[in-house]
Length: 484
Image (cartoon, rainbow, N blue to C red; front, side):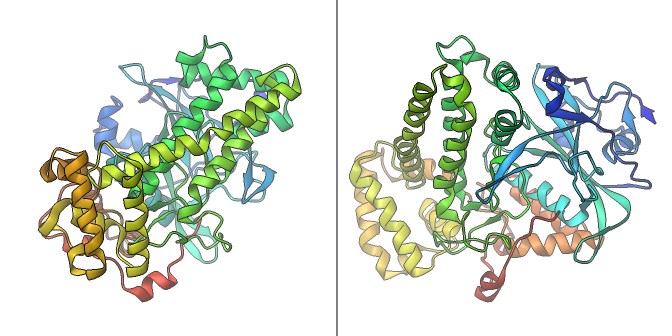
């Protein structure tokens, strides 16, 4: 069944060779219920917020807009270091919505039924996992970190069978593009040079037209994606975010965070923190994220080798030289950002040591990552005052000296710090509490959390429990799951 158009859809992706996608309609979900709707984002996209019935019909997958040619994307990827053929197994792109100011966004239904890439899966999503992605992606957006957005969560009729029986749901996800490093791996390993060239040209035209006339646009593409990924992961580290499943198919070349299945936020600082139940060896632990994104970028470089230079040996040298730039670029942006968390703008090598020393102290003292930086930013307003810990006092003295040298006084430093150090993050125990309540039909906790996390850099009255870390026994046993 078709419904009147509510999106302004185009289909530039379908200009690619047909090996990159399969045309497929969402599975009719039956009786559905709108659980969460992002009214602000709908307005930003120019979509009427009062079209509840039409929106529900489309975003549940029950009806397809008459201007829609839905499709699932094909891609491959390295999952925990092992290469495999993949594809959208439970997600379908309805189209590319073009806004009044000419921005283009993929509108994707996640949990909308099987596709040719589902293998043995049912293509469905659980209500809890869809609510989780909505909450986490919107939290990341308000933390000013590039991310997919969530337009709605629709509860669908009928159970979803996993390790137990769950209510089903469809999430509407919005991204600048769903092109991944794994898309290039797919083109390189399962297609031919013409397929790879078509993908490169399309990606540049859609996302990075400014590099189209460069001397070597393919090399520029690799460097551009590297820059975006460095900036993205630096920001993850800034707020204590652990993605949990940094496979190459989960790395968008647009530099947006997406696929929030097993993600979590760190409480007490420890570089080896990992929560994902499927990451038994800590491959994607907090401190490993920079090295992993470098490894993933090397896989992109490998995929691009046939187009980097017509001579294979020269292409390999160009790829290696590009990847070798990562460490220097990472160090520069990481310390610049971390020193902004300390209110220091004009940094020196000695200042970089301040960051390392503080993190080591936080590890030894088991200090909360968010609250420690927040307390430094806000003095007595903070929930944990570093001055309560005698071991921190020598560091505090050195920090104050550096601030006086490299900033325009403590007040200026604190204004910088407040822009980099959130007061509120999605605390893991509160996320689980809100999701459990919402799954049972009580949306009050998740709505309250979304409201607080919409202004994470501002302190708010009567919200002390949202700053408080969980009890140590919760943290020791907490695990996240992909939610498929």
